[in-house]
Length: 598
Image 1: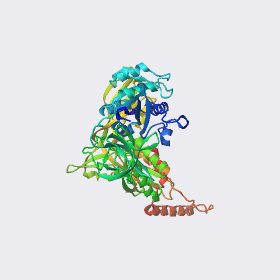
Image 2: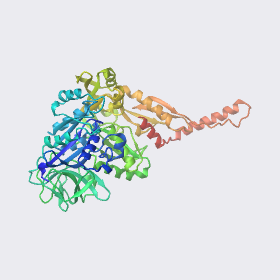
Image 3: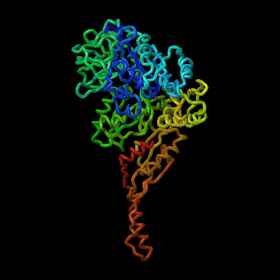
Image 4: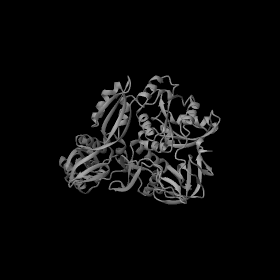
């Protein structure tokens, strides 16, 4: 098929605005998937995606559409995630497209990620087709959505298509709009073969399978390919397209989206965003990929069974292959043994990776408390980056600690304003400015420390606004703050798994909370065990683990009280000696319980 009849587009939206349901209807209408094998959320391959109702991985699929002008078009669709933690998945899909269908929920209106994803598409110079979805809902407010489309996104309301993925309304209009408005594939006249690697997958039988968008030339089985970032060469074993399952084809031409199976067996050799060319006639310049993503949240992952270390290492290697934003390096802990320091884009991203390790790779893991990357300025104007509280230098060497901040756009209903401002103040944030979106909604632009929003900020935002609040953020600058390292001591021994970097004002409250939890979770010992939170040499909170006590006076029936005293004093001396030499072994499930409750 000539490339002039090919259209590459993706669907972008806020979380839960109906992207995957709309994809289902497009697959049905174009007969890409037969009705008998069609399932709800067909492109969501993972159980996790179906359970949570969110898209985690972008999924390509090739459809054939008989348009009203009599031509048959090849439509390459990419369904993308909507959550802010997976924005890199969206940017990868956008780099491989010429157009984007922007979905807006008719009941919810324009939300934070709608704005963020629309600006990503504008930045890539894509043709954006606005679609107002879920128009069949009783609570749909079309006038408000069209007004927001013009006021917030500066897109003409006349361009909007009214649709419902669930009821199948407006599907033909969307397909016709893609054919008419989205331009045919760009950069096809380049002399050499160039294809963008936008995703990859590890198969234990076939090795690494690369998902590619071919911009110029053609890719065939039997030829030798060259990866331009590291000059790695390999023979191409098979090429094909997604229908939506992999289907083998003779070649992939300009404008096509498909997969390439090569001889490469090591997942780390293929980088997402790399340019694939032919080694016989290599291209001179790489395709403009997308910017390198940097992880924002770090935590330690350790196997519950030490024998599972190699299994965990292999699992992380495979997850790293098709997740460019996930990084890891090995580390060890006195309390937890050998493990890995892992970096994620956000808390949901961290949760999903941990769940995938447990389910897909069958490894039981413990994760330490999440932290961010701090910049520590030492005497002599030396700056180092610290992502693990254990590596923080001695307080005497530190001039200042700078923490990362985020610039957040928070969309909320007017009546939640007071509660949200109180929440932002509690999290040490400042409101930069406020924009009124319409009669009922406002957008706050805030600067917040990244460390403060890690655990519960999003949950509390949703509960305060009764589910109507939404947030999008980007990394801001580093700012100096009064931060200290808080350690937890069990029987005067520091436990590195519980060490954290906290603001001095909040240290006492957090320390007390953690000590209480540990005192409840650690099983009773033969002697009294003190659990303390300390900053430097100063103890700021304390609690005790219950002690087991044998009834040594049970054999005394009556008689002089001095006999009982003698036995109790002897027991007391024994406990004192035991406390000096005794060690408290914290069971692994205690770590899991404490870190889960945090």
